[in-house]
Amino acid sequence: MLFDSFSSRIQPFLNNMKTVLFYRDFRRFQGGHLKVWDYFNHVMHSYSYRPKIYFSKRTVWDDTNPWLKLKDQALTSWNPSDADILFLGGKDWLILHKNQRKKSPIPVINYVQHVRHADPNEDLYSFLEYKAIRICVSEEVASAIEKTGKVNGPVFPIPNGINLQDLPHPIDPSEKEIDVLIAALKQPELGLQILRKFHAPGRQIKILTASMPRPDYLNTVHKAKVVVFLPDYREGFYLPAIEGMALGALVVCPDCIGNRSFCYDNDNCLMPDYNLESILCALDSVLHIDGSKKDRMITRAYETADRYSIKKERESFLEILEKINHVWEKM
Image (cartoon, rainbow, N blue to C red; front, side, top):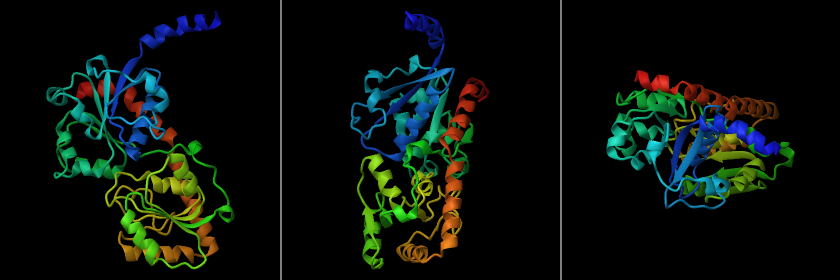
């Protein structure tokens, strides 16, 4: 009876909430999917909106899919006319009819995660002409797309945030089992070259070249004293480097554009040029770093990770969401 009474009181409130419609084509786990999952959860924290999502027929439903537990709640058909706002990332524009892309009757939030959107040789570039409120994962991405002169609508940079509560609790370096971890999931060949050429007798060295369940990946990084991250040569943000900092590792991460706002060479990490010799030199340097500098770098890394919280990301997004109709009408 008490639950029925509560349901009857809250139902009118739920009926008045507007819908943000998401779309995903989930064929394998990628960081981009993880961030859309974060934004899906941000909407759930709104008092005015609720998220709904439709998945492609090709979507893989395994334990790497963040929406696995919500599978039964996924929409069975794609009906953008039933939504109040569309949330589109990457190539999600293609789910819309061409006329809908050119002139959407409802606000469109376009989540831009990569500097590739600013490259005229990329398919993503053509989407910039469509009217949308664009949220970029970094200042670097925002600057890149604005410089094209092709962007149709306002651009809001919201740096990626991480949920520190989801990470293993940092442990003392003396408890870490791996001396050097080479995180080469995106650059396996380069990772293997580093492994072959890097000489560190008596050191425990491990390399990651294939995808694994996220908890296993984070636990592996958690056990490493030094982590060499090998991102793509161009990234929109590159969250793994911040995760490494949050887990108390000495981070080596070459410049990949999207990490320039949080990776500071010889401050919170080592940031070599992106070539084999520079990375090997940085690795040799970090293994012979004196204790006081090591402690200082790890402290600075923790401070950096704290600045990129999921809470700040959520607050920034919900602020935009609450005034979205006003922004859309002015466009």
